[in-house]
Image (cartoon, rainbow, N blue to C red; front, side, top):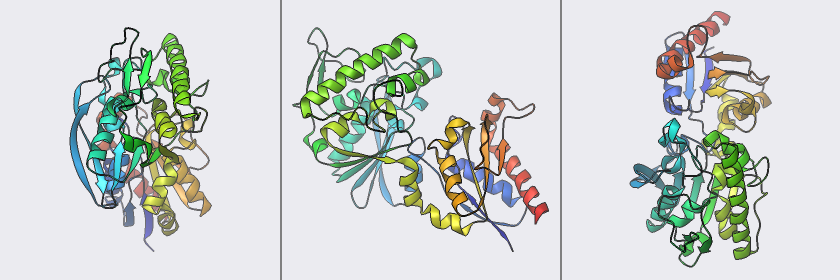
Length: 372
């Protein structure tokens, strides 16, 4: 009987999209044996979430020029489904992927471009919004986004903080009168793969600030400014969402949407699992092959590959994991493979990931054929 294989990888950040990873693995398997291969694109709220969503849903896509995290023009996009739901991946406007490594500085980076995408989706008449929060370059508590949506932030000289500049650090007064009124009423789903609160040692500044270029002094500035911003929102609405699980995602981007509007947080893998009907496909398959750029301790803490492995184990399925780099294996994975091994450095692996994935998939296919 032909072995059924479900290939469901996440992206290899900085190297390949999830669709490219899936294609490379399928080619390698096809060149090494006779298998029944089904590919699905995995996402968890981060990079590739829009592409994964559109792989199973019809939508109209809109190309838009917005401001990147440093206030420079950049080509971005969003989509609107037939039912009026807008799909927006914040990383396409305010993501780390848009910056060079030496440009990362959360004291400067702003989510303004994400706000522009939301504003334009609202103008297109969307009836609800799904906002994917992963991959952000910002720790601005959504202040940049809110500026694009009409909130006015002024500095100590009572001057309006310019578009594309992070308002969080320098604002002294806030006026909500110009906020697009639909933000208060439209249903918004915030899809994220983290459960961090906004404030404290597990919050946006302390956990995500260093990942986005902040040193110890910058982290303290961000934390104090975030506390002030949260108090402003409490004074405006009477609600405090700062310690809510997921409020710290994407540098606190969702906080004002939770506080001022009708937003709700949804765990990324759960959202995509329902969308892709993953349980049905896991029941169908004999072996699951998943993967991501780095397999480490975070892989089983809400990340897509770890969650698909947990799901597969509920049905006693074998799970093979492929990582660009593997620093830690996990009992959910029956076998773990790495592109970086022997003479293959991380730089070489990133530059040649597509070919190396094909070769590794051929190796896996030969192993499976020998075991049949």
